Structures are given as structure tokens and as C-alpha cells.
Length: 316
Length: 216
View 1 (tube, each protein chain N blue to C red):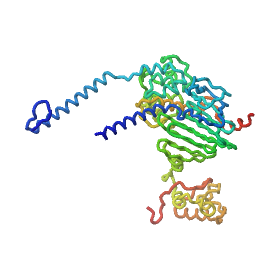
View 2: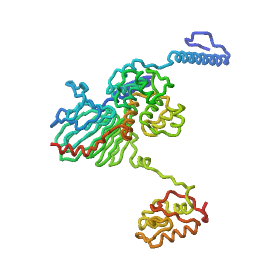
View 3: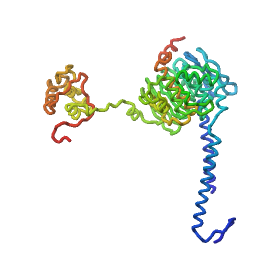
View 4: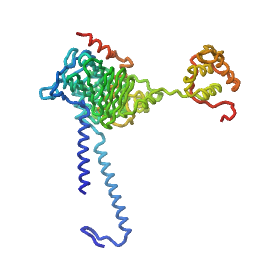
């Protein structure tokens, strides 16, 4: 019985803690925690602004002050909160090497911006919305993180990276568009992912190679619309490995009539690394076997799947 | 048979009577539960949120999007109408619920047949239909064919937004939370900017950084 009571008590405490976390979800993750011992404290500067943007400077006791309209040139110290409306964004510079864009319908905060020794520390909080950033390499090391309640983005010398966060569902998307390296850390699962340029990761923390599998367009072969010759060609050369053959797959392309540019020819032959007339011979064999002419395509036929082999012994 | 502290008639020696008594007890509990549910249904036919609707009309646009709605587990019709007009125009220029309803009806974003009231929680399907009309989503065959007639209009609108990646998969009759609504309009606003529904200047971070470096 005491164990049961203790279990119930622990569950109640857990629920209270969970509700407290949920209640705090709409606030930027970080807090104004500028360290006491810093070599130099900096201020961010508004360089571009569109639409309607407001910020609240930190008060004397650490509480956020009144919201005021933002304008270009305003200086924002650590502890400042920023919010944007629809059709609005604001671009901030953190020194001469870091630029941050706070996108539409976003609540964000500047938690830290200072220099310690040879490192410039920038820590942003994101309550909801989206933030993009870019950091140029300089002599001063740059340590930058963007925190949300469920994930943290840590950059490692990058240009054009960002995070989008939805507190209502806990979903987020961390991406790196151009160059450098970005690390995403999921607070819920404790897992992290390193992103290369052009990659992104969501709350599923799926590896990029697995995400890319679902992002690419998959062309489905129309087996019913293909001629017998096309089906045979795909059966022989539809593995996608033709480019690895001598001549970079020229022979396979000529077999399907690529490069000829004429709909009446079955291949010009004489491609790089191929025997002259090889394409013609292959096309003739296919035509003899199937009784159908190989259709010439200027762009080449790189295979659209495996069709059934027509009228060949052992074919089912 | 020994009874320890049991008050009531003595148990009979016939075991079948116990089973019958248990069945009657279950029947009584079932009837009582049904009566309770019926009473609750009669007493709470509509889940009105009057105070929330009042606050949603009084706060300014920034507070509405970034603070007020973020705390709401349900969104009232009045708040949703206001957010939809902010999405459509970039700002809310109306002062009352009736004005907003008229404005949305004139734009074809809502249907009068829905009969939505200001203090009622709004469902995802209705919100999806309004967003689809405001962002001029193309929609599929069912959305354009049956949806225009009012048959499954809100359901097909929700599916259209799912397809566009603006809303996660959901059922149209479920209530939408305030946070979900803000996330939705933020994505819808980006969709409108990408489609050129309003003038929008893209930000090139590299260029901005270069300009910042050049500036003394």
C-alpha cells in the first residue's frame, strides 16, 4: 500500500511538472541569463524591418518591460523580447559577422550576447515561429545557439540556417541552407543530429538519408503503356547502373536511340568509349526479337522500371 | 455463513439469487449513468466561452497572436473571425463581431448556413474552409465540385490544407487550439507571400551581412 501511495504521489507530482512545462511552452525557451563575468556585453541592432514589430527591453528587476514599436537602428541588449505580426519580419545584426532574421508571427528573445575571451556568445530563445540566421567566419570564435522548449540549434560556422517551432504540437524543423555545419539537439529524446548544407531535421530526428528518400520524386513506370522493345530494354538496362559501364552508359543510351536526334534512326554509334555501330546492332537485335522498332528518344532512356519480356523463351 | 459488519438482509442459501441481485445492481447503475449523461447533455448543450470571446476582442493584435491565443485550449468563433481578417488584410480594422462576420461573408470565407455563434468554440473544418478561401487554395475535384455546393465543404478544405502542408492531419469536427491557429495562419501567410498575394521582400542574409560589414 505505501508503494501504491508513493506511486500515486509521484504521478501527481509528474502531472504538475508536465502542466508547468506545457504552460511555459509559449514563452521563449531561454531566459535572460547574461553571465556576471563577461569581458564585454554587446547589443544587437535592427538593420531591416518590414510590417509591424515590437520589442520589450528588460526591466531593472529582470522582468520584461513595456512593448514598444521597433524601428531601424534600435539597439537591443540581452534580455530583450521581440514579437512580430503577420506579414512582418525584422533583421538583427549581432556584431559585424552575425545576422538573424525573425520571421512572421514569432516570439523570440535575446538571452545572451557577450564576449568571453576570444569567443562571442549569442543565445536566442524561440517561443513560437521561425528564426533564420547566418554567421560569417572571423578571427573571433562564434558560439551561437537558438533554443526552443523541445529542441536546440547549435551552429558551427554557417550561413543561412534556421529553426521553425510550433509550440501547439511540439513540432520543429531545423535546416541548413548554404554552408557550414549545424547541430540539432532534441530535448525530449536526448538525441542529436548534425546537418550538412541542404539538409534538415524534424522532431522525428530521422537521419537525413532516410528523410531524403521520402522527399524525392519517384517516377512510376507505365508498364501498360510501354512497347515490347521498351520493356525489354528496361529488363536489360533498367538497373540504373548503366552509367557505371565503360563509356558512361553510352551504349545503353544508344541502344534506346539516344543522341541520334532523329526519330528514324536507332542510334548513331561512335560514342565515347563505345564501338561504332554497337547501338545499331543492339537495336536491330531487339527489333528482330520483338518485331517492334526501338523508339528513339533524344534525351535517352535511362530506364523506368522492369517490364515483362515479350515473346522470349522462359518469360512469364 | 458469517457476515463481518455487513448491514442488510441476510444472504440466502440460494446462489442464483446473488447473481440476479448483481444483474439488477448493474441495471440500476446503467440507468443512473444514462440519466446523468442526459442531464449533462441538456444542461450543457453549447460550450459557450463568453469571457474568452470578450477578451479576444479587447486585446490588441500583437497580444492576441502572441499571448492570448497561445494560452487557449479552444478558440471561439469571434476570435477565429478576427484572426482570419488579420490573415486576409494584415490587420484587423473592424470593431465588432457583426462587422467581421459580414466582411467574411462578403468575401465568401464563411457560410451563413453554418450558424456559428460568437462564443462557441470553432472546429478545424470551419477554420480550414476560411483559410482556403482567403489564401485562394486551388483545391481538388471534391473541394471544387461538392464543396462549392456546401457538401463536405469544410472536410475537403481541411484535406486541402493537409495537402498543402499547412495543417497536420486531423478530423474536421475537432476543436482547434489557439496555438494551432497561430501556427496555421503563420504558414498560410507564408503561402500567400510565396504566391504573390501581397508584396513581399525576400531577405538575403549573405547580402545583409555584406552590407553590414561595409557599413562603417
